[in-house]
Image (tube, rainbow, N blue to C red; front, side, top):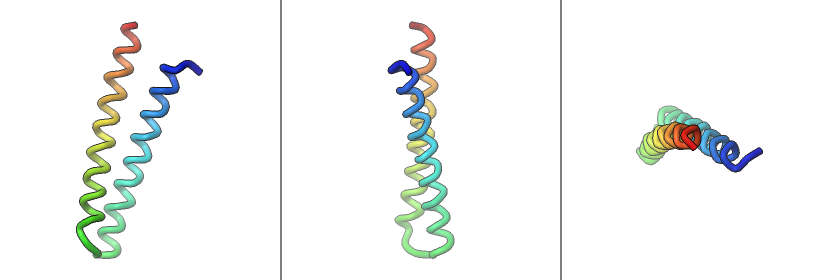
Amino acid sequence: MSLKVFHLFFISIAALFSIWFGMWSVRAFVNEESGEVYLILGILSFAAAIALIIYDIHVLRKFRAL
């Protein structure tokens, strides 16, 4: 496995884990009705996932140009 493929794979896995953590945080906020910390963590996690996906697409386009 080349370094390029590993980089794309690692960023994709990080995005998936970020989405999973966001869903877990929002579910914890809804079920436990505790502080807004869970909701804030969920929103930040979804934002990070979007940023990671955009970064992954950008890197993929850059690697294809090389």
